[in-house]
Image 1 (cartoon, helix red, strand yellow):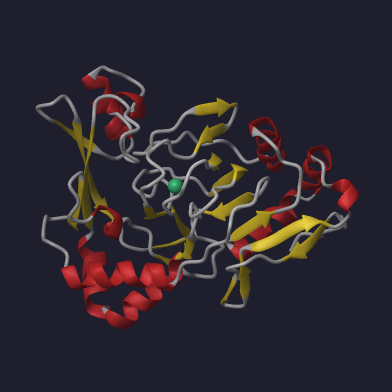
Image 2: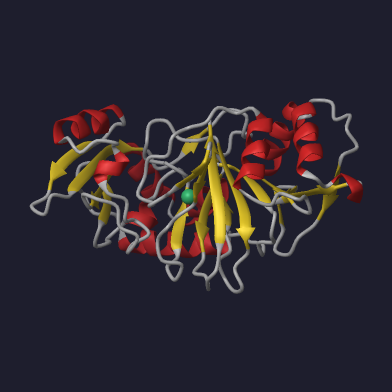
Length: 322
Ligand SMILES: [Fe+2]
């Protein structure tokens, strides 16, 4: 473990914390000295303890910085840049707006909808290692960002469906997802294919989709149906104690109007398994109440995250990193 010389942070606590395999999630870090809660001091401390901070995220899967004067997207960007991880461009269904440098809105879709649990960009070849969220305006009610230690889902699924899980793993998964032509904030999955692939040229979109490991079928209304196969059910990543992560989006995409999830050869997944998996994910979820200025760092290799329905106003911004 990297040496931690700064006395800058002290360990705090928050509602909803859980201890999973001996690690508290999320780990809450607060200013040890109330006189040093300004952004400049925080940026300096992060810069001086990069390796240690990175290890805390891997060890605890989620770290919540609380009590610092992170007030806006500019401050948030400074915090993100202080950590020195490379940016990764978002590819996915969420309609997002660029705010400042590395900072985007998390999702412009209706606040009344639940954004189902997912590993960020789980279906794309290159997905972020870190998802960082900043709360500028905490919601008056609801609007939490629940997260789930992914290996716990695999553990429970293996207990209840040992043969089925290994069978699906062996055969692989296939997903389909239909995107409109242009962005619409009418849906939390309202990102248009022109924006997603940064082109309005269909051939170019196909090339870019292929490079990301997807195929495209064009729909009569001009929309694009993307097909992704084969995809894994679980994955094990280095440095994560051999934990087998539930690295798929079966529950989120199975049997929906806009999406589907089957085995790679088109065979239907057992409905009982999908339904039970949904319950397990909820049972294992962890959530805290957002406070203004909170910055949450999620290990995207280890955690699923979502968003609960919220009353307005709510402003949570995001950065994704390699
Ligand atoms: Fe997300």
